[in-house]
Image 1: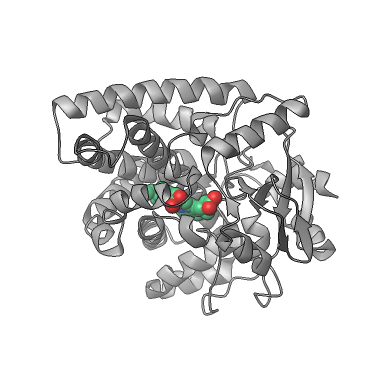
Image 2: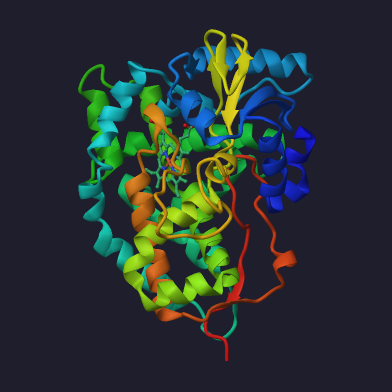
Amino acid sequence: MTDAMFSPAYLRDPHPALRALREDGPVHRVVLPNKLPAWVVVDHEAAKAVLADERVAKDYHRLGEIMSAKLEAAGGDPRLSALYRGNMLVMDPPDHTRLRKLLAKDFTSRRVEQLRPRVERLTADLLDAMPAHDEVDLVEHFAFPLPMTVICELLGVPEGGHARMRTWSQHLMGEAKPGDALTASEEITAYLTALIAEKRANPGDDLLSALTRASDDGDRLTEAELVGTCLLLVVAGHETTVGLIGSAAEWLVRDERTRARLVGDPALIPRAVDELLRLTSPVSLTTPRFTEAPVRVGGTTIPEGEVVLVSLPAANRDPARFDAPDTFDADRANSHLAFGHGVHFCIGAPLARLEGEIALRHLLARFPRYARAVPADDLRPRRSLTVTGWRSLPVVLDPA
Ligand code: HEM
């Protein structure tokens, strides 16, 4: 049954396979397409338990050893990309705490709120630049450039680097041949290392310059951690939000009632964003963790030294937690796990919510009748197992 989890049909719509899996139990052994044997958690309660369990760890030295050994034994490629080095997403406390503290103040709701005028402007400009009556790709010209520009401006990545960032990032997310992730990982590391040297020589009023100062201020951030942190922010800061905006726009094409409600009452949009996060789960599998000891979860004991992942789309539509889980309901008490849970809970959640809210508000205010320009079956899903969404979403913004 777990084979169905990674089939082409799963990439288009993971929910039939995940529903069947969840009905069969909360925890399953799977083999990922890169041959890595792992355990996947598919219900809400077990997902929260695993994500909060200190024995389910992330330290990248040990994680790297475990994953590489398992991949090698299975005949896969044991080399891991730079996403598995020196960044907080693959660290445990106290290193995780040290790195997260350095960034936390820049991503609070209050700090992020200061970005609102810039995000509003960017959103309006992107919509202005698109043809209203001809077919246009909403992912290429809206869902992608908005978060990419925001995170690159925040970090201080020059405009000339944005397009390359996108390609590297897509390769790192597994949207290309397996070897491409390793090449991308070297190229993006070299690019960011050079950019950091430039910020050191000519500091600006950006996050990268501030982090460079923090690293020069003593032992708060090593050079490798500085590069790792930038890499994580660039990749995590846009791939996920591209998925959210594209999937949300597509959901509202199919769900006419919800669209009409949001057009009529835009004050509902912030809550709608969270409900769309629950329904579309931009991150499909959490990053890998490993068991430091045998861990009993959902009635299953996962032995020590095993790789564990959580399926967020499965947890987010668990009928034990959400009534009518496949239906949009802006009024539900929304305890979705789209941003994860526990110490690694998404640091960018306030920024993602701001971008999602502004993107939807402008799109619906300006083009309330936008329509898909191709049949639903012709939409191409992203090919990644980590992030969900559409590779492209052809629409006509203002149909005759
Ligand atoms: C962590 C989802 C946007 C930065 C995470 C995790 C999830 C997630 C599920 C935890 C992964 C795990 O535990 O394995 C999302 C979604 C987003 C989004 C669905 C958009 C809709 C952003 C943005 C940023 C960002 C805009 C930019 C700052 C991060 C970072 C972490 C993270 C740095 C690691 C936190 C840690 O390890 O403590 N995100 N994210 N994310 N996210 Fe996001």
